[in-house]
Length: 219
Ligand SMILES: [Fe+2]
Image (cartoon, rainbow, N blue to C red):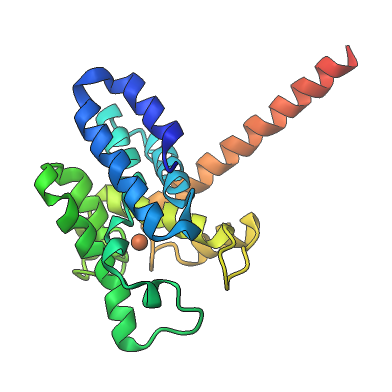
């Protein structure tokens, strides 16, 4: 199921106090997966990447967990998008593209009764662009909530490296190059830099882990 790992971790952090919210988020994560099984695992991965960026930027524990939760439901508004548009293998018409874009505002609307304003704002604004050319509100720079600027980088990276029907995955190097290219236009430069640093430290960590393993194997 989407987000099992993340939700287990959150249950440990927050304990029983947050259980109703986590249960609700779990249900919503199930709902978006039921609608679009091709993206199974996508919300979970976006949630992980976004939390990693937030940690790298040394945000507070509460902000990191809010971002992690928002990642699990960032595309919940896709429930509103007709399947003929969601799974269309060819280019969308202008009208269909408007319908697809509506998922951001619909996601926020779905979350509204839950009284989770921070998560709701991240979901509404995760397709804004740093240069103001995004949607739904055309916000620019730091007018876009930081969590949404983080989500934009995390979502775009995961979309690039994952293969879905009709789209071949790009290599990690290629995807990182694209983030660098769009640093300051589509994406907040500070967020891109934090993501690049976290990827570097992950690969350093993996490198030293495998060095340790082979050293142990030689003993
Ligand atoms: Fe989205």
